Length: 323
Image (cartoon, rainbow, N blue to C red):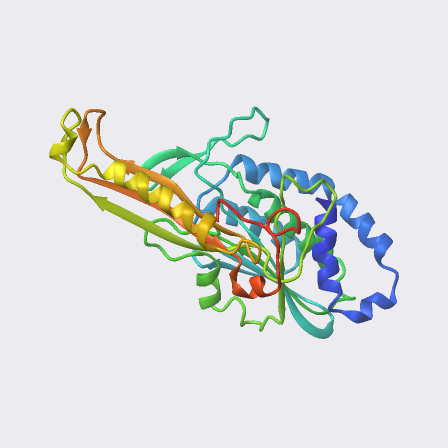
């Protein structure tokens, strides 16, 4: 994780050319290594107490508690639970934003660790366990580390650094608004006007200490969909008297997969269609009246296709199942 902090810092300082007249590499590496114990403390605390999208109240309060130690201008309650901190360097220069996401997922943690998740929450009408299964606990810790390290370089920084802690990256529940779109609409990129923004995402398949990147689009855009199949109820022993929406739904799911395998040019860009939830019926011997599927479609966009990006993981392109 210290190397991830260093990347955040280097991306920031790269836009402050005056700093590179000095030999800062040894200093930055030393400061990053010294942050390791705090990084572990932050990450484990956030991992143990995860919160779902638009419900990151304790997480936001914990972030603010740490940021107050660094003399930053802090703004709370952006896009419901988002936090923004601003570091104004002592020299004029560009405005650089660094971003991390905060929310967890309705997933049960199955490992026995001292800092394993202890929380559960209501999700779409169900009480479910919650876990940081997508690495956002590490992302928050990395950004807190970058905030602390860069704050110690305030006199040398030419420009302004905006630290953005974004809620609801996994998608707002139900019909709620949330996430990056809401933060942008509330002016997070305008006050001050951000010139460039950087973010990172950890991956279990990347060796520890390595950093991967690629030109063009890297993480897929996502479009959510809901399909409701209306049938006609009947007894399971007499299916010819009804119209089985579960069987129809199974055919639809197979057809969706053939869109990717038979209609998309995967040599240009990765594409994924996933049905993550299917619900229908109340018992084993009744054909229900309806069945509902919920899923999402992801692709890296035509811009990336034009650049000839290949499939994950050979060139670092990524299809995320949780976006």
